[in-house]
Length: 301
Image (tube, rainbow, N blue to C red; front, side, top):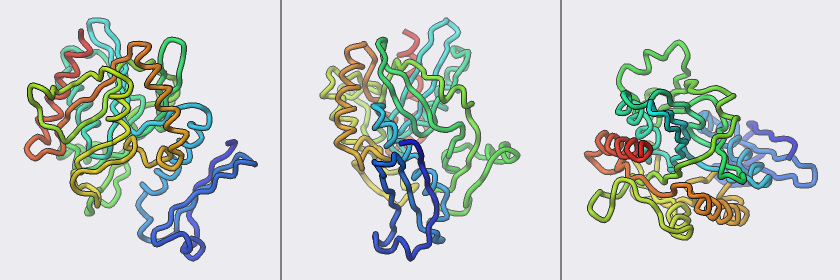
């Protein structure tokens, strides 16, 4: 598509599409995708517009042969000289941001630089050498509950705070640059953020998948324990934890996922899962911290 549009529309125009209609139209002939969100009070939450734009973006990426992801990606440079690009894929509340923040803290003595490529959404492209990862935005759309007390006030001069008195309150802050987002970093580690499994002898903190099919099964099931930050509760399953384009164009995404995972295993990219335990009571802090230390050990080898 040559153009993407997303905007608010008078509610009466969209009522025929359901009780809470957020819809889009893919004009294939003219290569234009148009998204519409009702101009009603319940849609005043910025996330509706943001996710609509990203949904349309992901559809465009899939049509170009790129695979979209819902996750966080960082490039880590260790003081030893080793460099790694890590992509954590997971649903809201899976522990992606918490684990990467814990990595920054626990790796203070070992890490010389951490570059954020994507905080929420991005896409992958195949190269002869491996897979390149890109982001979609320079800001982070973070839940207030996930931040340390007092942090928000320290960022108030450069942040947008949304509905702090409500559930799922958010803060928008810049976390990277456009150059980092669009550069394209070679992915070394692809991990599914598992926030629901306990750790034992057969369930390590970080587990490497042995085959493409094993990996696809985990990622496509998209299992997560809801933290209760939204209306969802208990164990949920979302196709590739990505309702933003992947679900709507699942047939295209299935083919892309099979192609990309096959290529990653062929190129020796580490594909597995990290058990953050963020959804298990009592592990809200220790889970991501232990996950971060295991991740630091992995990328230091």
